[in-house]
Image (tube, rainbow, N blue to C red; front, side):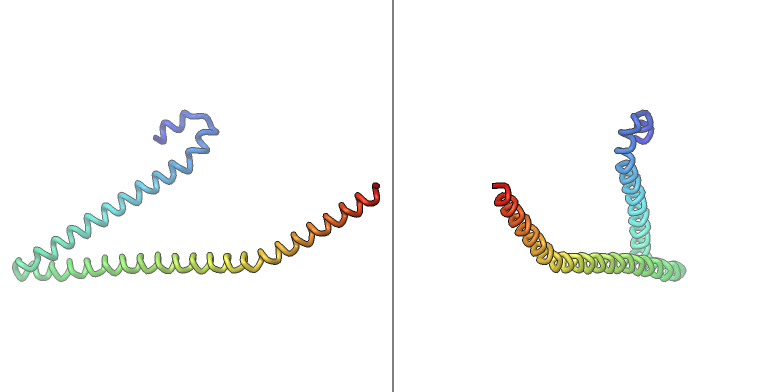
Length: 130
């Protein structure tokens, strides 16, 4: 896709560049997710199979369990970060809504006053021209 875009006119390239970047980012994310899923699946499988193995594999089981616990901890941390980011965005949106709510009545009052002044000026102007 990227090679095809290179042969297009500059105006079209500039329009498509953000979409291509988004697609590349999505592919990168999917690859990362796939890698994580493979690692998690392998670790989970090793944990399940470790219980039926010899004592030597019991040591491996502990290591795998530690790895799984670390992966779960990282996942929880990422989830916590997303929640905190969402909370921050909600608070910002609420702040903006409150500011807007406080501004609208003032704006409408000024607009109403300006409209009345314009009406008075037009009325006076029409009386003066008659």
